[in-house]
Length: 315
Ligand code: AKB
Image (tube, rainbow, N blue to C red; front, side, top):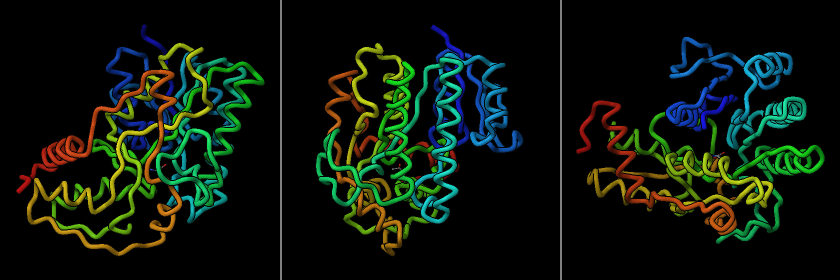
């Protein structure tokens, strides 16, 4: 059934594709972000909304009356380390503003968490749903505090709030911005344009990753699942894991002269704190999550779509 859906942070990497997907499903979608309308291109209505501007947020919500809100606006891990207090304000105060409006307007809410909630003391392989959580980045701390806060609002005020711990997301339609896992998108553009890439992570820095089509499908599936099937405040959510070297080797199967070299920087220290792989069996059991893209499928899809977008040949 078509719904009235508000997207906050619609111009970001996930928001862009989520907006398109929900619009194509026949929903009445309002996309919002802080970007100038001249620099965005949505198939839906668009409005400027800063999640820190509670009055504007309230105005938009009281007028549009969304049944569902996806709050995707956030500062990611690498940018967060450059502006920690601003990142905390945007990630936490932005969430509190949305939660307070959820209390008043009773919409269903999606809010993204991340594998960044885990830290150096967390078991790195097949990281369980419930385990040691001691993040060291401001982004990870804000995401874990956010998980506790949405759970509080769920139980205290009876709200329907759902959440996923996203891994690194790989997409060709919109660029990521300010994350530690962004290399896994940049590498495709550089491979197609210049046949070489300098990676800021260690060659063997394995991280959990997912193709955007899987991420969007899983997100909407979580939101459509019966309310009583949702047992976790935020679900471990996983598809594949690979290192930069494994990704480069797969790209070389399509672009044989592709070369990668490594200059690890401070982002490698962030990635080092995160899990190598995630146990998402709770998501698979509770609401039937299942990914479709493995590494070869993901690489083929990324190369073909970006080459077409840039009007370039692969070899
Ligand atoms: C980042 O790298 O900061 C994000 C994330 C894993 O949440 N992509």
